[in-house]
Image (cartoon, rainbow, N blue to C red):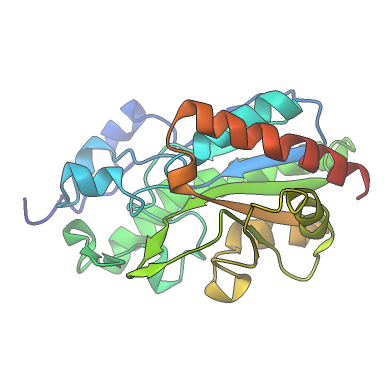
Length: 262
């Protein structure tokens, strides 16, 4: 198909039948950490069709962060931490971007054109913000406010994955820790990861806040005076459930110990 329908997800009477754009797991978790996974899903609501993409493209990193949700769920279990994650592909709208940013709705991702996102008018862009961005971030706001008010929130950690090669450039890191002005949590986790000399750890690699990938943590952590940490794991290392569980087991004690020092 050349173009998907421009009808916005969640608009009109049929919206009542659509699944939520956000899920909260382990909401009663006792950990002082809140886990977030914005790029957890490659699901496209039916009204978008395939956005003009093939199945291989919809399984690739342009549609989601492969493996990230598996790591996040296992971390939630190991840490007894609440987890908030998206249930809609970032191809509809990237939840980790300021909604006014041109790339909050991608028309070109790496080398791939997104036909169903071309030539969107302001009405459609506003509808996606209203139906996808607002419910997700409002849910995080409400949950974080309640946890902080009850003294149960010490830091917010977002879980992502990255592709080993981007725009034909190989990326050597196994894992990246992304942070901004408050580096306390990132430095604590870095110290633990570097106990393994075989592990290549990137600090503000392969992305940094200068790449405008820090929107979620800026909105939900920094504005509340909480230490933020974005964890990026190379996606070829977390393809299977066993690999996802292994990385969660590696990270959980470091996140737990680091939180005690905050």
